[in-house]
Image (cartoon, rainbow, N blue to C red; front, side, top):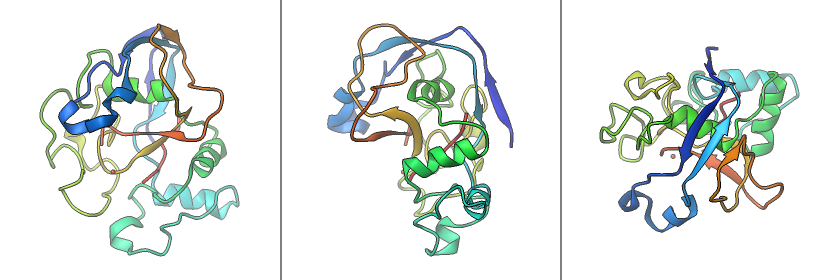
Length: 204
C-alpha cells in the first residue's frame, strides 16, 4: 500500500469555504474557520479495501462488516472500500496494521491543502469523472478509480465513494488558532469525513 508523507510545519485554514447550496443547514456546524498547524504525518493514499480488512477479521482483531452478506458486485469486491464497520473496528484495523485513524484536521489537510479549494482536485465542478457520488451510480467502486480526482498530495477518493472515519469526537470548533488539534476529549458521536456517501477508514 502506498503511503503519502505530509511535511512538517504545515498551516491551513480549516472549514473556510463550504458550498451553502450543497451543504444546506449544517454549514453552520463547520464554522468558524480557524488556522491549524500540524506536525508532519503519513496518510494512506486510498481507503482500506475489503481484502485488506478481511485479513484483520481473519486474524481475530476486527469484526466482520455488516455488509458481509450483501450483493457482491455492489459492495464486497476485493478492491472496493470496506463499508459497514463502526468507528471501533476502524480504529482496531488501524492499530492492527501499526497505524491510527487520522484526526479531522489531518484528513482535511490531505484533502484540501493550504489553498482553500472546494474539492480535493481544486475548484472544478464535481462530475462523475472525478468522484463517485450520489447520481453516478448505486454502489461503491474500487479504490483509486478516479485518478483525476486526486488531492494535491495524490490521496485518492477523498471526495465520493464512501464516508471515512477519523479519530475525533464530534463537537463545536474553536475559533482560535490551534496546533495538532484532536477534537473534544469526549462526546456522543465520532466524525465522518468526506468532501461527499458508509464508513471505511484511511490509516495514518
